[in-house]
Length: 287
Image (cartoon, rainbow, N blue to C red; front, top):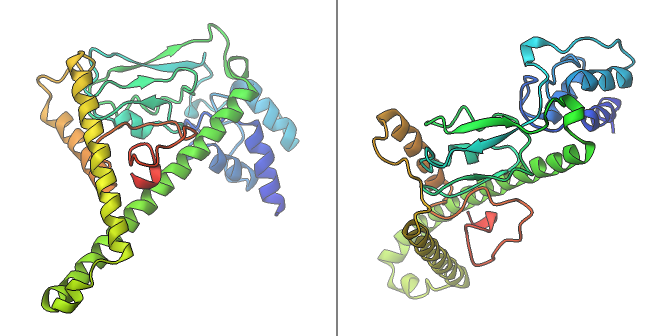
């Protein structure tokens, strides 16, 4: 382990792990590494506030300096709140959340799990109908007075799980694409060779057919659940008069879901929730 990595580990432990990107980096870990390599200053984390700067200064044996206003201001900790009367179920906020604190499904109501929200604001900008508000929940307390080390540790774990889930989904999508290409290549000689066609039922093919049947069954369960929720009036209430621009954003999100094989079902499933091995929606490796 290099000295730079050791220092990055120590710095990361002092960051609030909101993963808000206000520091100018994609997450808390890259910011910690940049500080350790002396390519970023230690006053760029608004969620940590003045106390956060002081903690880092003490570790680095440097003077305490003001929070850089270009990165934001210290404030009471907020949580995201979704206005259900405006939500159109586009899933863009779910995809933006770095800690999987939003649950929902396409064209279904989304909900923020308050206890998991880090107040990062990242779900606000992608919302095409401005139905997400950031509501302060800590009174006048700001920075580390509004956040605890236990909350920071939990948020870091959830972010790590979030990244791992995305990696699994990407790998699964690549594997499915490779399987489709292989299937297409194998189909050509089989069509011209009766003997090859007769022997096409291999264990791999059988497993693929079983997997396809399981996925179809899961999608049917999701469809039935969706219809049941709609019958109870639990779906989005703001689906009329959607602008062409908003619809384009939704279509783009749906296209990404199609590429990943996410045709239906619930998004934002907490990464530490046990997966249903028969459901490609709850098992990220089958999504």
